[in-house]
Image 1: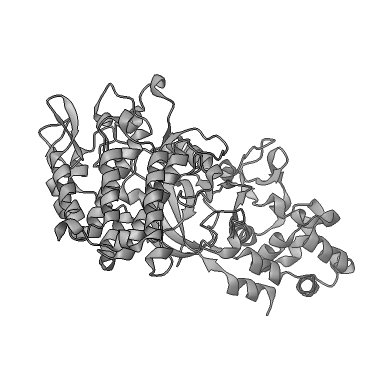
Image 2 (image 1 turned 180 degrees about the horizontal axis):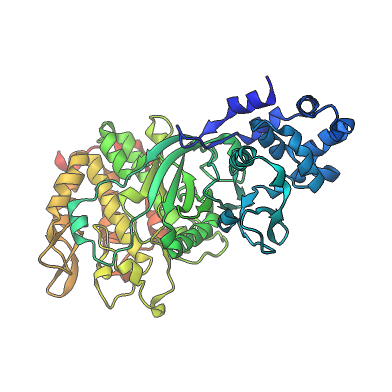
Length: 547
């Protein structure tokens, strides 16, 4: 098989059905060996061409670069020339030392989209630009080319420039791409839509709510273009990816979320979503690349009715409650271990600010629940907790949603990491509701039971977990009666009763100063999980109060 035929056979088109394509890095490198280069060149160079007399030297330079530097080889340029049928032109590139490290070559009008594009000298309108040490400079290489060959080169060079995403040390790499780069996607699973918001959430969204214009897509990337060798606890075998697209008009939002995600990398926590890479494409947006989950917590509740009421589910729930609170404790700046004695590097407290079932991802391996885990994701609303004297986190206060705590509705209150504790308590109460009564009880019954006048807009009903009565905050009586109903359920084992006690006594506390810290909660849930492992009757037993 000729080099051109091999390259054509290995081409992957993205988007599917389009004309843009990429050739996987490893495939390309395998095709262009010293032997195949020699064979191709000996056939394409005219007999009288000067290159024929120095064929061995030319082959070595194309393959290994001048002075044996692989970074400055000419293999991508040669392959591009092969695809357009003028591989003899490689001599022009070698003579001018225009090598692979200087790709892409650009038309002047395209240089504004390139990385750090900077035209060193004013160039004619039709000038071609090549990457130089101080930016882009004019290149006269194509002056003798016919228009078809010139157009072919500028199109096909991108076939070999699909990015290779990698982590640099413990940090994700950032890639500034152009609209011509072909992303190394081998399968596009389409957009991952936000789960339908409950009616009350839609009604209560204030005018100043943060923009929700992000798009999330599920994709498979070619394995040769993913190099995430750095330790990623719990995410070593990533096969599916999700990228979050943020509009170019929201650069400040992207920078804030990227900064938060990068700061979380040092925790290397298996229950906090890791950022694998980020990239930007002019006019299209900013992108964040993550491992892709099976779904979110709501999808688990919706699609796995077989897990409702199972004793094995209780064991898993108690374990996940521990892991989520332990991870949240680290995010909140307490990096000590469960025994409170170990010391880890200091970490400045971060408020997630938007904990809800849709932002708790469900990573599954097979059908066994015990092989699944829950992961905290979507840090787009996160903010540093700068303390009570720094002013309130107004961005977080502006968010109207089911899981917000009372202090979000109090203009004088400071929003702190305690916000996350309340939100997680609401989620855990729905978790227990699902386990005992199923998804319909979460979505239709419990949410309706909680309906009452909103504390800010009394003429509108909301399904928050708190209310304001005679000037004071309280957990809604409907929530208290619902919790009592769960406690009296026949399937409410001692373990589930203890989980409910922690939720109501330590998490759903209207005074944020009296709410338990995430570290305290982690210890409590760790003890519950440990007791489950030691005594199966603790989580398998029935509710003896119903006998």
